[in-house]
Image (tube, rainbow, N blue to C red; front, top):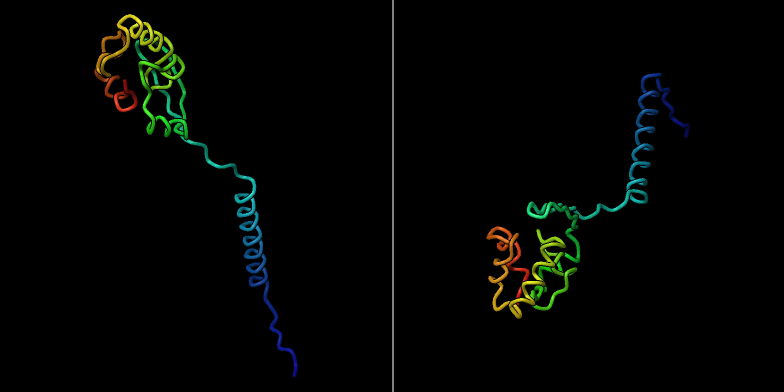
Length: 132
């Protein structure tokens, strides 16, 4: 049996070359995306505390998820723990600790609204994250 061959004209040859190049480029793109593109980081949220003129960056990460599950006891929390609450900077955290010492611990979470810088809006943001 003889081999059947068909001669390609120049347009068919160019088309096959272009298709081959496209396949090679697609392979490189897939390879690059699999091995070299870093994972997407968690989104960053910027909280601006208008009363204290501070800006804090926080990532919605495992730490934030832990805060959702574990409430912060405002009668026991340190300044660092309190400043992790949304909208609570270092200055407000210090005020919370001072007020806590002054009144010999908070009786309810609503007492935190007595602190200057914590109004109804801020309290609404943190009330599900704190306890006494």
